[in-house]
Image (tube, rainbow, N blue to C red; front, side, top):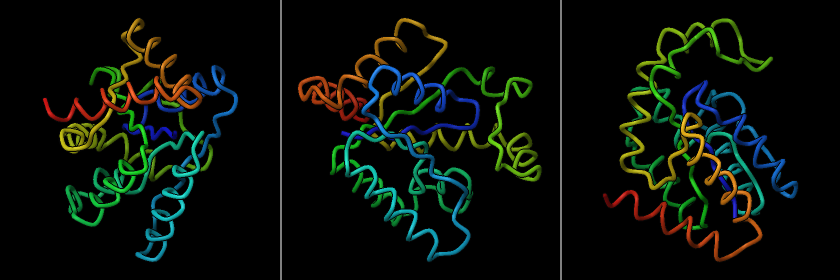
Length: 186
């Protein structure tokens, strides 16, 4: 079982991954890195991320098949990228959409940046965060996922516990997967 964390910058993905690894040290963490610069680079990213998630006991911070749809305006609901999302669902990946309140996501003074992020990247996020939030919300109406809001302490504690257990407890995994797949039907 593998976990894919999705959401805009400042949505709690990194903190959630750290919490899950503390609860279950067998989980391996991978960050997808910078966005692909060419079609060939994108193909390689998609293949690598699929292979990582297929291994099990893995947490991946963003996948190209989802993030490209959010951060590139002309790619929302692109068939090729949605097919890659379907492939992840077929191998049983649990997708977690980290989505605290919009106010929290727009609290720029609390943003934490990774060292490799350029000043241009940071400015782009700050200027377009509201658009990225909107695109993620729209995309996730079609992608089965579990919602994670770190502001809801009880629900987030429960989900962290269940996600950490799901990699070694088949019944917990099946329950989470069922909840995730039913969520899209609502």
